[in-house]
Image 1 (tube, each protein chain N blue to C red):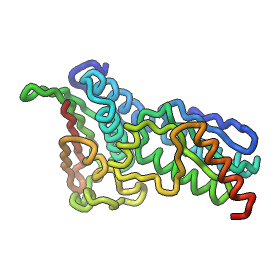
Image 2: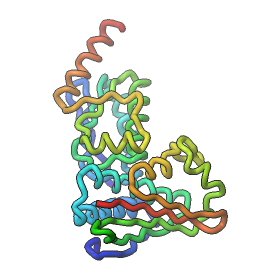
Image 3: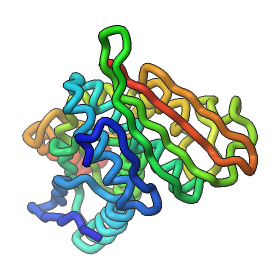
Image 4: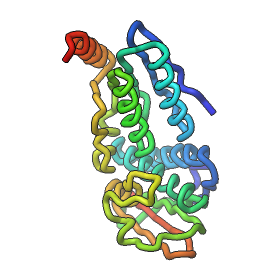
Amino acid sequence: MATEPSGTLPIASEQHIVATRQTVRLLCQELKLSLVDQTKMITAASELSRNTLIHGGGGWMRWETLEANGRRGLRLHFEDEGPGIPDLKLALTDGWTSGSGMGLGLPGSKRLVNEFNVDSAPGEGTRVSITKWK
Amino acid sequence: MDRIPILRMGDTLLVTIQVDMQDQTALALQDDLANRIAKTGASGVMIDISALEIVDSFVGRMLTSISGIARILSATTVVVGMQPAVAITLVELGLSLEGVRTALNVERGMELLRRAREEQSLGH
């Protein structure tokens, strides 16, 4: 399944967080990312899928493999239809937490990848995408 | 849910994490260790994470709280065998595992626990 160039996995329980890590590991290996880059991407995916489950009330991860300017990459989208983030700037501040975490989720994940995008508004869910280029 | 086994070697409790843990499994390990320390009076806890390919903020927080709980129960915790890629990732993520003692491998971890035991018996 993970060998497909694109696909979707549900994030509705803790087992799914483990499943997203395993899928992302396979995708990174296929892309032949260095061990450190693999570890960073899997860790970021773990943080974001937990956010999707806990703060978004569940959702899904979509993945796509990319090719641009002779480089290959992996992009992951974490999407939910939960309550959304009222103050995005605050949520991207180190140390900020909604109460149940350590405030590392978004800013921490951002540091682990090459590209990071977040789109959210109250009542409109949250969409976070991360990209790692080889 | 899987439970991580806790082995006892003299005064030390030994935990080897070999599976990609669900969050509940990590929380259960924290409870199980606290209970085993209280029950056995162990003075040291060694957690071998050499088989772990990633440590995210959840597992990092679990390691920090196990160290804190053990300290209050008068035991020293040492985390051994962290892979270099995991250490690099943890620091970039923003987790420094403050208050958690670490050692490169099991042998050095045992040495650290032995010294901690000596210091404690000298009343430091």
